[in-house]
Image (tube, rainbow, N blue to C red; front, side, top):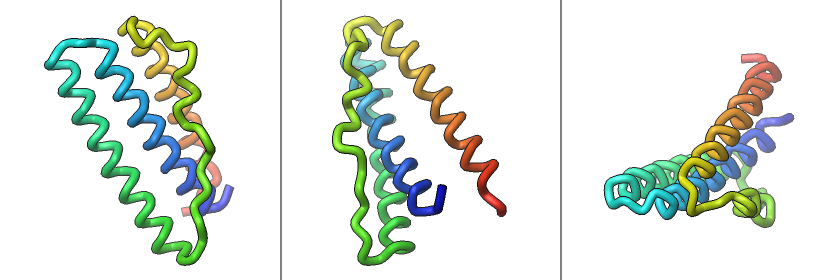
Length: 109
């Protein structure tokens, strides 16, 4: 995996996180929980913007190509069931950890 692919994967992960936190905000339906998850969406949007800036800086003139539908993975998750959404969130965090561990193993510095 090269640096361009790594940045693309990171951007896609930020978008997936935004989608997940939006689903969690709807799932819990309490004002306090909803506000926390909406704040997390904002953090992920900032992360995405920074990664896009990094991509544009390192690869000027190259068009960033992301997966077509990054919200598909939420299909089949019972969004009205907070436990089901949290279990899904845990599985996504474990997947992200594995991806970042592989990236770290492949990175010489």
